[in-house]
Image (cartoon, helix red, strand yellow):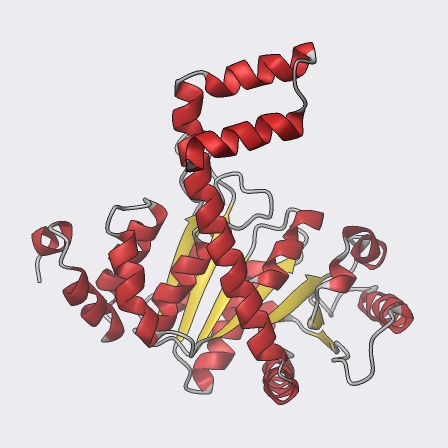
Length: 323
C-alpha cells in the first residue's frame, strides 16, 4: 500500500499491516495518535479487538542513573527469551518544535535492524507527569501490533513520575550510587510506586549502601497481608550483568499480578484514567472555543470583583460547553 493510501484514510488496511508487524504501518498509526488526527477514533475502534495482550513495563528514575542503557540491555534480554518488544521513550519536548529529542534512540542502535523490536520516541509536550496524554493510545498501537512486552521509559523529572505507575503493569525504578538516591528515593515518593528496584552501576562504590538504604526504607512501609514485596536487584547495564535477574523478577511479579487479581485492577484503572483524559481534553477544546467568545474572561472578571465565586463560575462554564 502506498503512502497516498495511508493519507486517504485506509484505516483497516493500515491496522492489518501493523498487526502483521510492518514497522512503517506502526509508525504511521503512532503518528496519527501524536497528531490527534481526525482518523484517531476510527483507528482506536479498529485496534480495540486486538489489544490487552502485551505486558507493559514502566522504567523510571532520576537523570543519569542509566535508564536508556538499562532499557537497551533489557530489550536484549527479552529478545533472548523470544519476546517481541516495543519501546516508547517519552522524551523532554523541544520548546521550539514540540518534537522529541532522540538521544534514547541513538543509544538503542543495537536493535535498529531487529524486526522484532520497535522503538519510538514521543514528546512529553510539557505534560506534568512526564508522559504525553497520548501515550496510552500509542501503547494500544504496539499491543495490537503483536508486541509481547512494551517498555515505557520516562524522562526522569522527579516526583511527578509517579504517573508511570498508573500506566504500567510493572513499574521498575532505577537508582545508582553516588547520586544521593537513597535519600532522594524517599523524598521523591518513588518508594510508593516501585514494583521492582534496580541499583544500576553496581560496580561503583556505594552500590551496596544504596541497596541497604532501600531495603531499610522499604521495610518501614506498611503493606497489607499478601501484598507484593518489591525486590532489589543490582545491575551493570552497560555490561549486561544482572539483567537476567531483572527479567526473572518481572516474570515473578506478572505471576503475582495474575494470581492476586491485581493485573485486572490495574488495567481497569488505566482504562478509566484514559477515558477521563480523553473526556477532559475534549472539554478543554470546547473551553478554548468559549475563551474565544470571551465568556471565560467575563466569568474570571466576575470572580475577581466578587460578583460570583469560582465554583458558581465553573458551573456556568460547564453549562455553556456541555449544554
